[in-house]
Amino acid sequence: MANEQETPWVVIFTGKSRKQKTKLPPAISSALDLLYGELEQEGPERTNWPHYGKITGKPDMHHCHLNKGRPTYVAVWKVTDRSMKLTEIRYVGTHENANYRRID
Image (cartoon, rainbow, N blue to C red; front, side):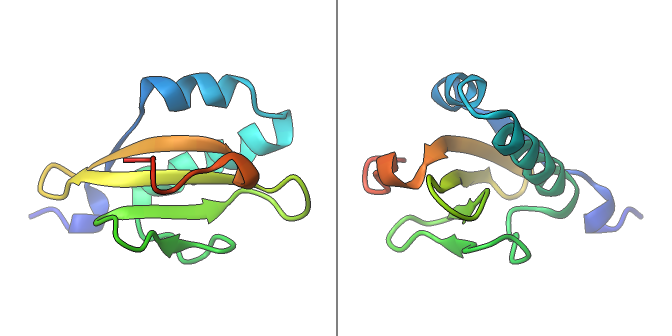
């Protein structure tokens, strides 16, 4: 019987976040690739990332910072199906441009 941690999560980018990813500086894109790999292998709760947290009022929505300093880049992801282990990355970009109320 497979252990839950052995079954990877499926992580996808929404169309908008895929476009946002192409505009990131190389160092931020590398950090996002690392986060992506961790989300696949270890699931959506990424407490080892800076300023990780669940977004208040948004069930199963998480975010973290991808770098320190300014501008600060963030990633926002949502667990869309826990039984299927499906997570969608919904936003990647600067913290200043992130409108958490509009990200769904």
